[in-house]
Image (cartoon, rainbow, N blue to C red; front, side, top):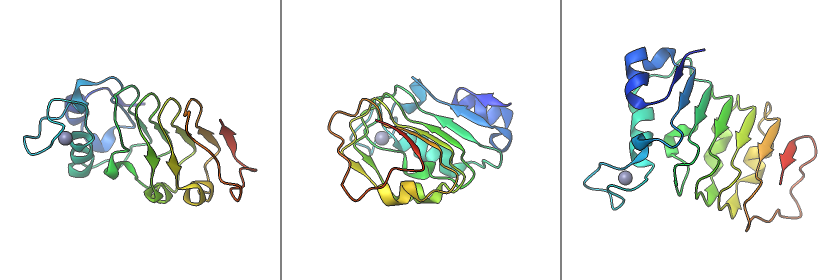
Length: 154
Ligand SMILES: [Zn+2]
């Protein structure tokens, strides 16, 4: 299994062959964009651009653990992705775009600040088995959301 633990390593290995991109607790998420108001702090813009501008034919797993991110990087929602670990950040929302991750099997968003989740999109993903939402203090589940059939950890 080809694992890259930095953007530079992913490019050296050729991004199209990387199976696991692990940018957990990574200096690669520190913003270097002069136009961005999060310059020199943790920000999704650099990760988002890196994912957009490279080819990821083999990518099955992305880990972005412990990066103080306040949102999900918009370009992370790839069709081939099987495992996504965004635990231990400050993310408030899981957007509707999660529906694009048709192959997703495991989603870990424990230890975040989730208040808004696109439940219907999430629960309709055919291969999704485990969803970890533990340690999201303000998260409440609407009455009409049916969690049966998925292993949801709360
Ligand atoms: Zn930025």
